[in-house]
Image 1 (cartoon, helix red, strand yellow):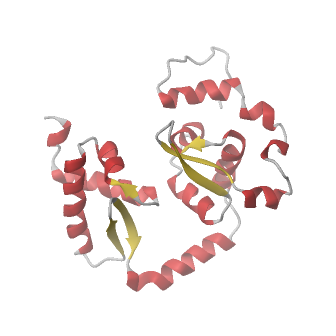
Image 2 (cartoon, rainbow, N blue to C red; image 1 turned 90 degrees about the horizontal axis):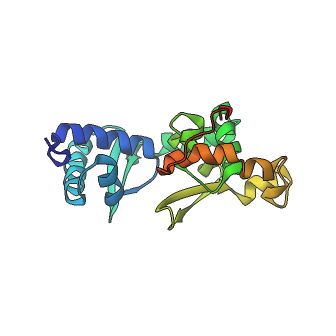
Image 3 (cartoon, rainbow, N blue to C red; image 1 turned 90 degrees about the vertical axis):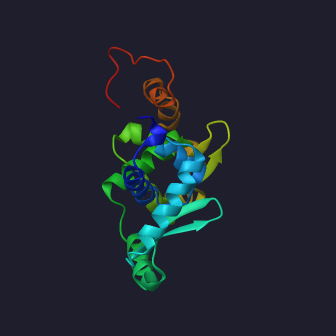
Length: 200
């Protein structure tokens, strides 16, 4: 069975996971890439899944705007969603969030895949929280063909530094050869890690 003949129930399950973990709108082209199918199949899967999911009448709904697809809270739950968002923004950063923010500050601009490669865990929800707090920014990197993340001006002002390069040991960590070699594997580059390289 080819990847384009994957049963629709599997595609629906995969799409639900993708939308749940993403935390931001995804294009059908990106969804097709993640599902391992062509764009036409992705569009059909999104349409069928949207109909099925939204018919449940649950607290979340699949929203399609143009080419963008996102799993969002139901309008009836707007008050609850806003309360949760405010609570998250008021609270202190968790250790995983601090770790991710540190990596982004020192290694940015960095892709989600590279960040997850370093931390060894999924970072979608963490990135969304840091973006909501205004501590990081994201932009499309045309060379890499995906979004990259870096520390924001608000983050620098919070720390009282005028330039990201003023962070302690920034030069050594930003261009660290071991980390760069480690990240090369996420880009499919043929770079074997050093035998005696310490774990990152």
